Image (cartoon, rainbow, N blue to C red; front, side, top):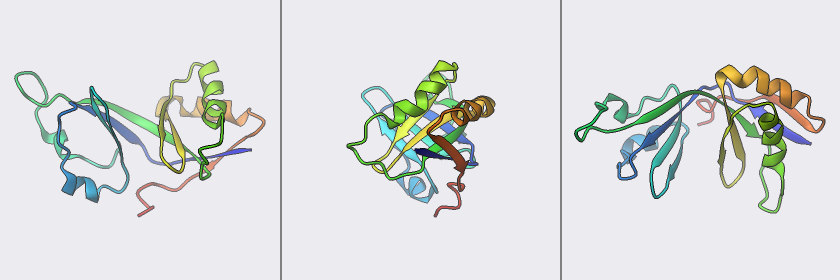
Length: 147
């Protein structure tokens, strides 16, 4: 049985230049976040209620900060501490969504996985998952309450 918790929060995904220096004092105050830095970008996922300082920066050309923003994501959290030996959990969740044309964005942590779906596709996604025989979706707590 795979148990998921649908978090009530909306999330925003930011893509920044790889060389951007995050304001670490500000990051420490964020209630929940995930950061990924690759050879080509810096991605930050935040609750929509968080307004990072780069939001006030002017965007554009000529040296101004370039930020891409994807808003209105909802998160399904795998409701279990995941063992690295487990195989196929994430696939079992995202394959039915793929089969129904529902795009997802996934984040994995040491303990668990998060499957993010756009708010306007959430009802459809929940319906698809409800029809999966070994899947249960319950309400989760806000990440803003889990401090």
